[in-house]
Length: 126
Image (cartoon, helix red, strand yellow):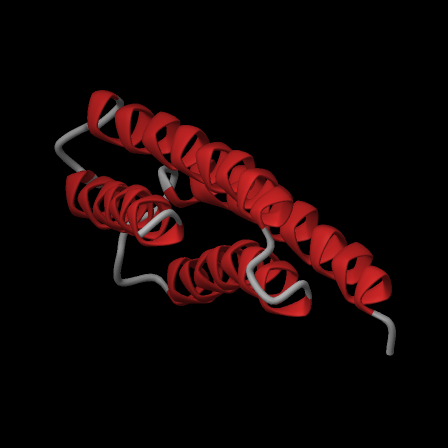
């Protein structure tokens, strides 16, 4: 397949992953961590993060690390960082005592996702 097709497919994966992460993470706040639906939504949340990062990696490898693609991927990673940091702040701010551990789990995942995006930004231009 031509690299431009890989790029468009990776952008679709990135947007899909970001939408999944954006829509599913707030739903985790409403339930306890030991519910079955919490585990299913957490798995879907992880899939969203994987899709977002795979969109960055596929577009970078399709163009063999060209400078223009590094700049595009920088902005894509910045978008992941912004959304993950926003979800982290939302989850740690809105915690009640009954379902506090679920908030901590969702917030920790979002925090690790934002740390991974910062690490990828550093490695991108290294």
